Image 1: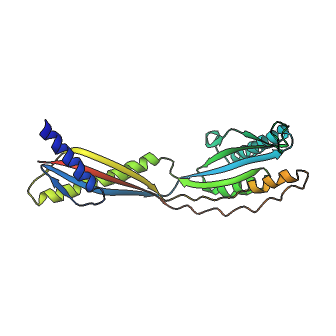
Image 2: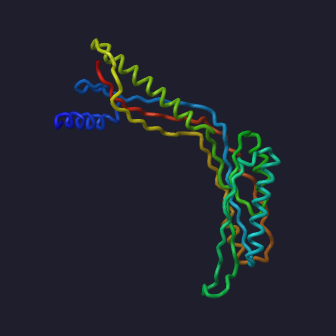
Image 3: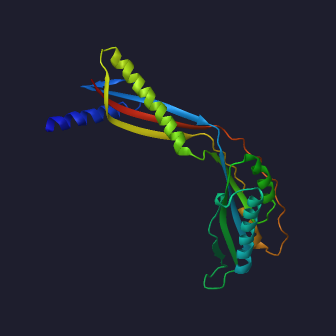
Length: 246
């Protein structure tokens, strides 16, 4: 029993040392191989995130403004044929602003929250962005491109890595007049690369300045940021396999 445990421990240590290489390792009657596989595809899902922010002397007014802004974004999304399931609204949070002593009444209140739009038709991104940017209490945060079925892409990358591992195993043992047996051990690592475009467009600093003069004029709407061109999504999988040698 102790001898068997020693063999297993030796196998695991050797595999760990070879994690950074694709070289073939022969250990007793076991063949250890590492291989990579990739899957590349055009993104089919865009996620737009908006932050809603409102600041007023009265809590009710600040909350109403933020809630209305969130509703306007949701209505605009529906007008652009987004399904209700693709419109995700977050919770509105309230933050009071005090002047000196917190025991006194708050000087003003801010209300903020997030709303997320999941867009499958990329031609809708520009019109939605232009319409929402004119809203004085909405703040465009990010645009991210991805795959709607990431698990399928991961399976494709893993399958390619396994095919390469088995091919290398066959080639290595063929030279020795042996064949590949059963799989004794396998480790899989998947990395998701590429396809993300983040656009930052922060107006919270401008809104914070309103606290110094809430009676001032409303800020003019800033120009919309350019819409980023999506890159291909690349998923890479690395497999480390230990095959029995027949």
